[in-house]
Length: 288
Ligand SMILES: C[S@@+](CC[C@H](N)C(=O)[O-])C[C@H]1O[C@@H](n2cnc3c(N)ncnc32)[C@H](O)[C@@H]1O
Image (cartoon, rainbow, N blue to C red; front, side, top):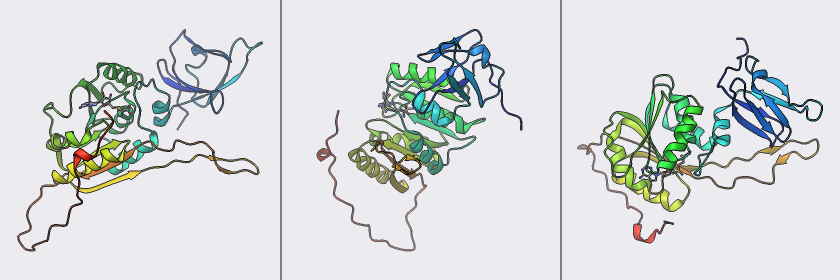
């Protein structure tokens, strides 16, 4: 296959070095100004991804920039964000453990900055759909902008909606993905939208949220309930000092999963109920 060419309005990943890198939309006649000179878009459009370009004016600047096709992780880490976003590694696990893929119909709440929405939208192409909701107009506006930049407006719809109190009038959904402060309050409604065997996914930064969400899933008869935390370490590779980098993101969040089932009482074998861990929601205060 031949190399893909940069087209008008594409989002390209411009890289100067390890720290200085930008996601920019190339428009004919436009330019991108950096402290290392100016990149003119007409010089990128029509060239192959993987090419290099030198900043203007050449005599005083003339720095080399690499032009790459952005990865889904680049969209996430370099998009405009107004809320805490989901990191690419967590999104990767969400995709692989939820079964979300081409053709999936997914409910997401809240959309926040739309980081996870972009990733989900990218993976359900060409025939799936992401129904994304938020209760903050600012988030909705910002997420819509990011969705447009990622050219996903035909795959993703972002609407005002409260996943805890509203009736969304959707059914046979493959997955419901939650990233909001009180996910446990949304489990019962979320279950009603899911098709049998569908997946419930909840991303939360704190263990208190995980406990409440897990118990809510148990109360609503979900099975295969599990929670994970991913820790990513970048490795510095140097001639005589190859080791993990000193700084890292210590914690992003916990990811909880469950599966919807059409449960029946077993008429053949009596099973003693397992003793449930004692919990009292009142004693699990959360930051409000
Ligand atoms: C942490 S952000 C989500 C970030 C998003 N996953 C991303 O990757 O950009 C949480 C969002 O949930 C929204 N939210 C909170 N409660 C909600 C509810 N009941 N229904 C819908 N959205 C809600 C908030 O307004 C906020 O924008």
